Each structure stands twice: as structure tokens, then as C-alpha cells.
Length: 286
Image 1 (cartoon, rainbow, N blue to C red):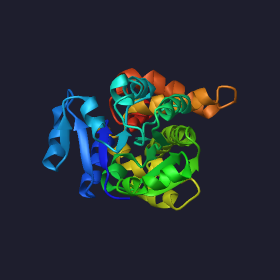
Image 2 (image 1 turned 60 degrees about the vertical axis):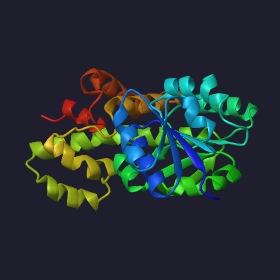
Image 3 (image 1 turned 30 degrees about the vertical axis):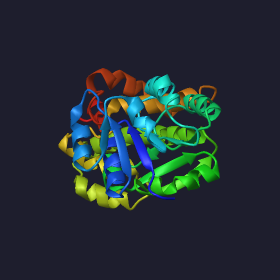
């Protein structure tokens, strides 16, 4: 595939570094001016084309990438006439939001009617992975659709998995986030107990990092918890939203740990919502 023109909507903590990586790989990038001009100015300095409207973004693009906060924004943006009717038949939507499988399927059905292919492609790896281009993509969609946009995904990600049809990307992301949300709370409890028992946290990291209790959350959030530094990367309110998607999808199952974790994220959202999701540990650490 040659270098295609890409429209990019959603320049937040994840989207901005992902967009930068596309520019570094030589893709033509189109973005829309919005209330926060900072990300647009950064991208323009690297060669991105800015537009005053979303219709300007989609008019000339071959591929549209969206990284939005949640279902409400997915529906508002992607099902708006400005975007849905602005994309030409034959274009491709790569939808990378951590949304629900149901909303993804609704969008897929609308785009199929307009002759637009869809790849359901949420990511994992956090803001650091987005910056380094080492994300993991969980792709739901037809094999040929995935292959047609693989070079685009490879500009942003290190690992790309096709997990099934459209909707399964969002589903497996919800499962991942359910685990991540539970593991974050467990890691905070481990740090609280270690501090009470006067265990050196660096030693704990070495020992448990090579033992059966190791987790990504413990190893990657231990330092920020020990310093009580909760500068936002992935925000608490978004983790709450993701765990809620998982619990909702499993409403007919018994998911006691995830349900309890969701309660704790809900209880602390008002105070910690715009901090890093590891701020949940403040309800546990002394």
C-alpha cells in the first residue's frame, strides 16, 4: 500500500502521540481545529494539514482514524452527517476508541451501507506505548481490511492481533481493562501492606517482579504510587468507564472482583477523575 491520506479525530493523551508517529512515518495527516489549539499547532509544525471543520478532514482522506473518549463521542462524531456522509465509498474507518462492542457494531452497520470498510482497533500500552509506537492493537474486522491498513497500524503499534469480526476488538479491550482495573487496586493494596511492614519497595519490585505475584500494574505503577505522583496519563474516569463496559457486558455473569472494583472507581471518580487511574490507590495508601 502506498502512503494514504489519513484523517485523525481525537488528539488526547493517546491520540496526539499516535498522530505524531504517523507523521514521522511519512503519512499525509489531516486534523481539525478544536477548542484546544495546542495539539493542532504541534502537528502543523510537523507537516499536518489543519481544517476548520470535520468535513474538511474527511473530504480528502483515504483512511479516517478516531480515538475518542467513549460511546457518546463515537456516536456523536461518527454518525454525524458531516463525517458519515463526508467519507467517500471505498474509504476505511479505523476506530480505536475504548468503547462498547454494541456501539462499534452500530457504527459498522451504518458505514457498511455507505460502502466504507471498518476496522475495530482499540489499543493497549498506555501513553508511553503511544509515544514510542509500541502499542498493541486488538483488531476486529475482515482479514483483508486489516491487511489493507497494516502499514498504518505498524506506524503506531508493535503488536497487531486480529481477534475476530468487528466488535471483538472492543470486547477483548474491555476484558483487558477489567483485568487492568482490578490489578491496579491489588497493586495498591500490595504497596500499602509493604509500607506498613517496612519493606523496601525497590526490593519488593525485584522479588515480586520475578515471582508469581508479578503484574504489569505493580511493576509499572509502583514508582508513581511510592511518590504519590498521579499526573494523568490514562485518566481515572476513563478506567472507570472501561471497567463499567466490561461489567455491563457480563451483566448475566457473576463478576465479583470486577463489580467491587467498579464500585471503588465510581466512589472515587468525583475526587480523582481527572488524575491518572493509579490515583485509585489514594483510597488505600496512608
